Image (cartoon, rainbow, N blue to C red; front, side):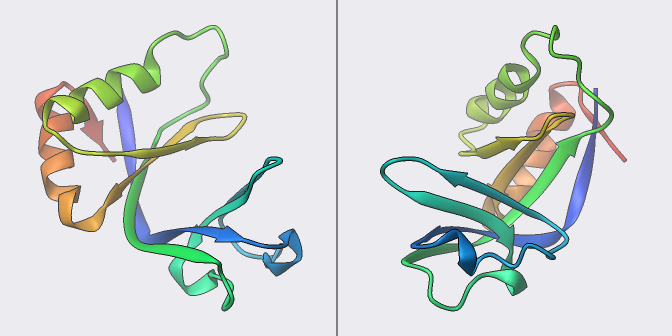
Length: 121
């Protein structure tokens, strides 16, 4: 399976209001539940008044469109990273999966995934 390394730095935030999100940003994930509103975005697009922010995340995504009938795509990636003791934060779109890794663990993550049979574009 091919993975694409994303060039940017990301952050994971808790915000009070979805109106804090710049909906014109190139890249973001927004999740709202009864208990919280979370935002994953490019570091330079983070709202100034986040309740909590965790910076320095790097990422990659699965190349191509994943059919909903596929089983174990994210499980395989997370297992290879768990074996190398690399924590992850994952998010998904309709088409594919994104996996975020803290920058300090990124090189170790790439090695673990290559050793697990994954390739990178």
